[in-house]
Length: 392
Image (cartoon, rainbow, N blue to C red; front, side, top):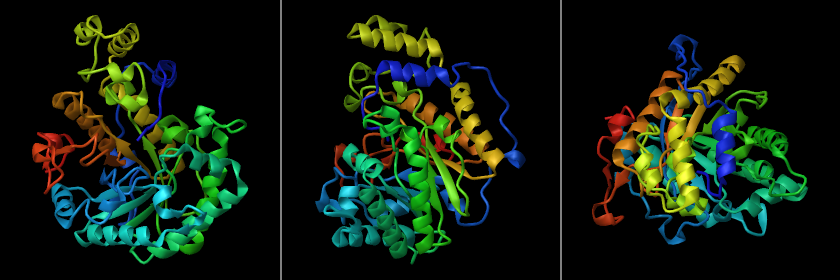
């Protein structure tokens, strides 16, 4: 999930420079789509993210109690095939040496994977940093970079005890310091060779397990379509899609102004259905952004243009592609609009035969709700959400 501020100009560039046209395109037939080969990769078909469990900012006291077998059984029974576990570097890497693994937390993670796989779900282990300084160290410090390679070799060596159908290794979530130019002298090109070297290290320890790789710029769909694929077997390429960002992140305080002022934006958008919101906007910037969103008329065709480009790239290179993050920040959006967006995303990804993972199960983008807003017991699926996801 994108976790830093995005300025209006950035969103306008992202929204338009890669195709604002809403012309419909024919969706390819399944015979020509990027397909899944082998039973292991088929496990990445239908996923859900379990965020705020092992993240950098998560409460360590709940590592062993956050979820129970009842949660995993509920997820399995709904029709999901895998869960993605974001794991913060500060949780799993030794603070004094990136290459070393914190044994106590490794045991918690291992037990979590045992519990998840025991009900028939697979697991993606996703190194998911919430601290920009960690990524900066990997990008600029050769010693830290070598240590991160060794860390992944150690992780792969430990978790290869699970079958290739049970555990998948995702190298690093949403690298972006090149795209944001937050470190002098570092551009988006830094990531590809670093990722390639980590793939080699994982391969030395676990020759047959699947590795999930992505592009710089927050695992952006467009940047993935420009990435040169790596050589070697069993590599899956992932992208994240939260566009239109104005809709999916409305009201999100961490994004900054004026996004934190937005509420009740509908999807699909049009000039007509945002007019009242624009007229009653709390600021000039918010009104401009609401009006712009309506003028773009975001709908399934808009999403199709982006997913189609990634599909073409994967199809041409004969490599599997998945979208393991999409979703909508939940506090200020109607359930009807959220469900429609999720349905459009799922429908397109399924027609392009791309595996997917919705963000997330029960946190701020969650698709479940606990009675009385208490995290006790098992939550309920939001109304009609499983139908929107094509599930039970």
